[in-house]
Image (cartoon, rainbow, N blue to C red; front, top):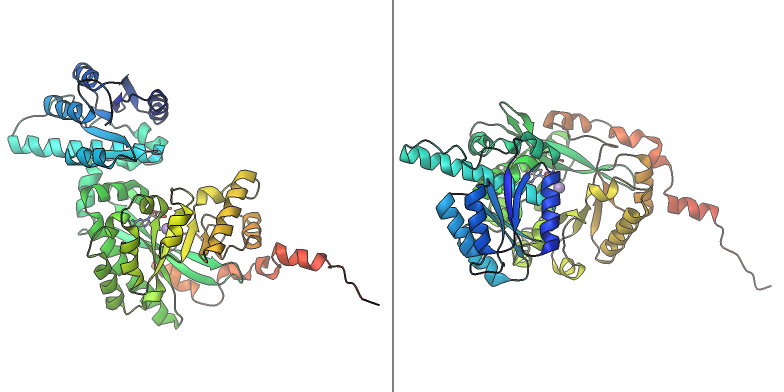
Length: 444
Ligand code: G
Ligand code: MN
């Protein structure tokens, strides 16, 4: 079977079991599971897996760090580390050994898959580079190869399976292969266009349109995210400023930012330059950071504060998929959250999802955050969200992402969805008010 072969080094039985199951489900072949560092070195030598997924804290004469070093040096097999979140010292030591990937428990399957794919792609690039450098042919079991289309497709990320993608990405900007699409955001009070979200697309010469989920992780790993992100900001601000000028009405734009970009001291300056070059007022730009990213970022508060001071609006994206505590959220200088589409898709029929969305809205209202629901596809969802006091929504019920030219057409007349009967209807809360007459007492 043509799939990446993984050796698991993990001493917690439940975690090892979950990893085995998860990896098999994504099309990987688990060649073995060991619980000790010394065994790991031995088995890696015998089995020659394509990659080793290594818990840093394992027992035995060799801990995970020592075992990883030996496996890398002797067999040139790439390592992805896995650690528990709490232990800062171990994390630092592990990062110092420059692993090709690093996961912190609890991880999710998508993250596990992306991390493994990036590590395999980077390993392949590095071994190709060193072969070219040394003028030696590669070993037949060189690790990067057998990343299967199956494994990748299971997670809907076919093109990450092609290690050349990482190389192509380095030239995509210079070759003008990036473009932006604009997804309308609609105010739920009156159906008006309340802004657009800029979504990055890569027009790959062989693969066609490649979506951000398939390459942002690679861009983060290789560091090219900074230049890509700068291009997105500049282009999004410029397009929206032009639209506003041409049509004589101000439009707001949301831009997705990787927390990796936020780590750079220069990021606030880059934002300021993009606004200035475009002549866009700062309050017309919203920056979106994923909840997962923010929850893993040290000093998030200070970094966000610098941006906030520019006057831009800040939003927690994919809300409900990370682990930001409400007390931490309360301290962050953000004014909006976007509820992840995975929590919207089964509404209104799924009671658990409904309860989650309801409590997210209640918390957001208490924190005075503006709430946008992602991925709204039907009227029942829309009615429910309006009733719960959700402010904005985006999704196919209104519009798919639009090209800059299609966005131009939206400026003429009312937005196409505004004509729908939806906005004529009162919200469910208002309907209740009409139906329910409070008892009226008189004193006489
Ligand atoms: O494939 P789709 O367009 O649905 O993916 C949208 C998601 O991809 C967004 O929610 C966002 O997380 C991410 N994304 C889109 N454009 C960008 C971008 O320019 N930069 C970053 N970092 N992420 C983006
Ligand atoms: Mn977003």
